[in-house]
Image 1: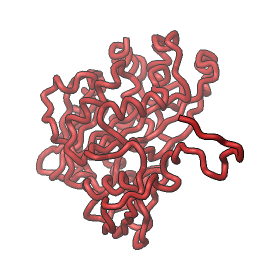
Image 2: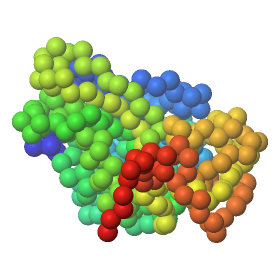
Image 3: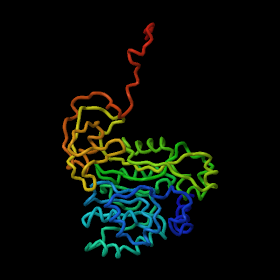
Image 4: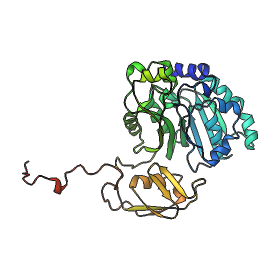
Length: 350
């Protein structure tokens, strides 16, 4: 039901984003200046059929090769095409013919608008559950993005697994989607409206973390999140009090990431050289790294900066030679009872 319903809902039921019945497939974040400028260069027909729920434009992507999963009418692809520049590329994959037709119709218009000698965007018709059947080069992409689409597919593990194989070492999956605070009952999953509105296919956040780790993304990082408003009374009644959030995560393809944030006494100093984030670099929602200051960091975060495209923007201090336990305020504390908490009459046994 999932693929057919997605094709029908986004190709036939919805004529524009104004027809959506909830704000699940809407972006509430205010775009930064560079994205706003890029949006002004996107054709109005493309913008009218936009159904994303977040901003999928990570930092420092000039010259990168990007794969957009569920690219729709092409808004994100055409924004990213400007940010990666003429020497980068964007490949969009979508399964809805009506959406692809709009994206492809305006390809030459955008090339001329951007002033490029040749287009750096291409669109492929395909099911993102079957990415490895689309003859895409493995280990090729610097960044994979997706905007409120993975919730629409049935086999989400297949999407995460394929994304991991298609990324370069040090690459990242940077995507926005809808999550539930508990598992959506099976009886709701076949509802075509709830599915099309990105609700019934939403992952319980705990299941998402498990799927991501099993696919090889050991330390998913939350970047932004917001609660969703379900204003349509009929839809709200069906959902029976389940809360939903739109969230953006970044998942790095890195060897050696640990299950906990471990402390090795390391620090970084941000040079302030990432365009748009000259004062503060945002790795995730609790790593806001101010330029020029020494910033203590866990081993996983160190790798996310030192072994990715971000390395040139930082100075690095320390190594992995000495382990100091779990990084403070970043990970699970030791499970053992503290000495002062033990009963005075405690006895020992084997």
